Length: 215
Image (cartoon, rainbow, N blue to C red; front, side, top):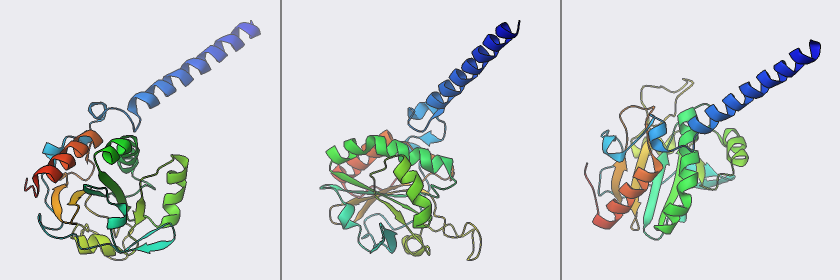
């Protein structure tokens, strides 16, 4: 009887483990956009913060791998750059999923001649673990002090200096051409939504081919 109970217990544990793995695989960050309602097509990004279309990108004040970054050009592709402003890789699950999805699509961005760079409000030490654990090769910059987000005009001003979440941006993407001009941008009004990587790539490719795009 005891042996039978032990076998049943082992089978139950195995079944639970398989169920967990199935749920993880099917709801994980690299799943297709239609499997995660938080990922949306570019057509739904109708929020318009940030620099004006056609204006020059004003530059950066961020840190990356222990050094100060002021120019986005070092991350540019031959055709242009997509600058991704995100909240936090420390506590924001949607930001993590977005970065993992973008990492999966990185070869396609590179093949299109488009560089990718991500900027978050996290201090560098809070970024390191996630980046190393998930083999992230996309440059992830830390906008410590909110200087970049403030300059870009995408700082979420609902949070004041001293607040826990001061320094958060409105999450979204800016598309820059090879002359460092803003040719398009993608900002969903709902801060929990993200434009999926496939849609963002197609949007950026089209914007770089046709020039400044006012949505």
